[in-house]
Length: 82
Image 1: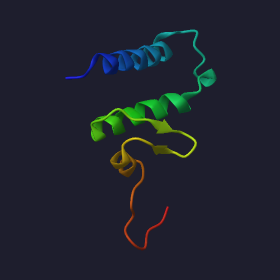
Image 2 (image 1 turned 90 degrees about the vertical axis):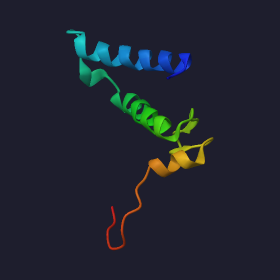
Image 3 (image 1 turned 90 degrees about the horizontal axis):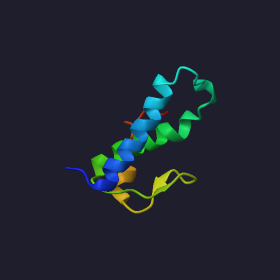
Image 4 (image 1 turned 180 degrees about the horizontal axis):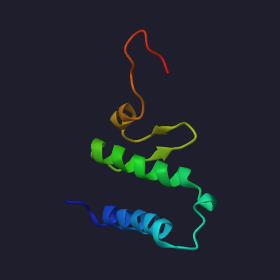
């Protein structure tokens, strides 16, 4: 079960995504999708970590739940780099 604040946050993101899909006059190219995508993906990280996250976008890290940072990057097998 999710809390009231989580439900409000989900409703807000849903509203934004619905608006981009149903508004016939919406020019999606004007929408800055980066922050929206980051918010949605961090929601997945928060759900997996089981906690509310404090995000530092400049450093690209979660500041209050250390284990959540483990979900942001992969450790590749030796011999492989990205």
